[in-house]
Length: 518
Image 1 (cartoon, rainbow, N blue to C red):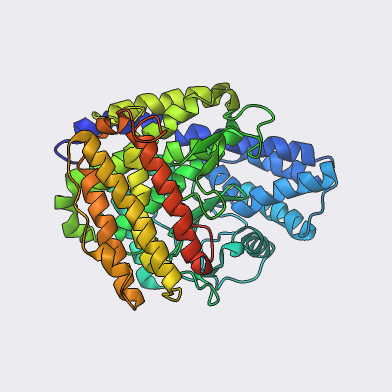
Image 2 (cartoon, rainbow, N blue to C red):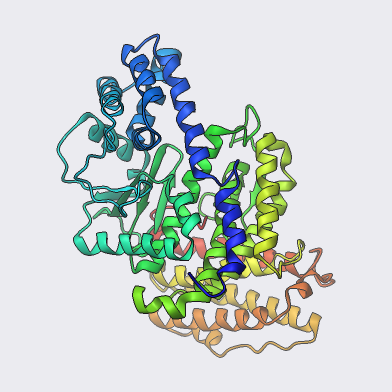
């Protein structure tokens, strides 16, 4: 397809074709068998379950794939087992049993549809692995009632609502899927085969948050990804977020099929991985259990390769898919790969939380990452990850800070930025570089309006970023003799964490929902 495809194809072939962790046909078949085993358990209580197992065993691969990929069928199986085996309430018992009935009918008739998705639904494309695009205008059915119940209980707390995409949104979704397949013919299918429903969402009218979630997938909502306006800007953003969320869903299917996590694993009791690029507040968003860190490791390893491929071929593809917009593929590739390396090292230090397959999975991803990235960072280098958060906070502050510009707030901003500039000067002195204080810092204490304060904040932080981004990463591993921190990187972490808490105190009235980068 591309002149340098031979440079990428072996890596793509491994990520998409590895029998245990990449091959979508094998993984999907294992996932289906797991649900069939659960149905055999159910057959003691629900007669239709036994009939559904028989229909499953006689159905074609494609028919099994479509029917058993249905998120409402998966939910129904799990909910019915919880009800009959463990005496837990099932709020939609009749609907769940009806979904099993419909699934049996479709399998027996070899129909390539599912209880939730019929032949009238728009899809990402014409291939069997192209998921259905959710439409709110469909007729009422047991599966649609379950889908809305799932959304209300698992998603709406994020102050989002389901939408029916218009023709232009459907077109950009399809263009994004086409672009992804053009960049990665094998990997696109391997990932997207785990996405059976794509739902477009928007903020609820009462959601005052000025920063919107771009995309979302949940363990409690099988085989479904949700995309919002920030992910739908153009085919490039659609391709990125489809790949991102598809990999999360693939990870969930892997955990169903293998002993990825140790027996008895509990996220609440798990060892923690500190996601340095996420804010500490609100709700300790940086503090990840191993399963979450593993999912992010899986995603970032692939995204690094994705952005590399975009950088190589954007010059040719922009003629068909339009401009990249705000995307900087080189910067995004480096950021993704750095985060992947960091997570991989930390996961190997928490190996006691993994099952045997999970340990193999981490080693496999780590080996793939080493092939993707020819200039990995040092394991001790963390400053660049902290600076990613530091830079993002500038955009977040501009979007969210809407508090009155009281003298106390001006003093807080001045003190915060003064400490940050002092940090930059100290680091500069330690490595023989000078850092100038921008005049905007003094303006914060005198300015009378919010717009000027935000501008001054951006300029002052910009000066710190400019100074620190130019420092070679290995320099941040140098000892730090002017504080108790073990090295310059840990000193940056201390100052950035302190600024994080103080910024949150200014923005907290505007933070309507937790913001996290995964």
